[in-house]
Amino acid sequence: MRQFFTEDNNRLSMKRLCGFLCTIALCAKLIHTPTEALVYSVAALAGAAFGYTMAEKIFKKNETI
Image (tube, rainbow, N blue to C red; front, side, top):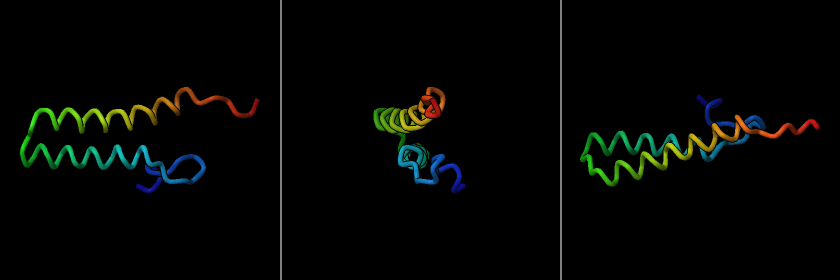
């Protein structure tokens, strides 16, 4: 589980941690009281955090050149 939250240089990835916490908050909110606006806002924040991290990995510049 620790590997999921760390980057290549063994530092904690705050984007992944925020995305994970937003996902947990979204699940808890859906179980408790599903307000449509709150669900969409938390889902967008979680998706943006995971999407940004994924885009960084895909479009990472080659640092060896």
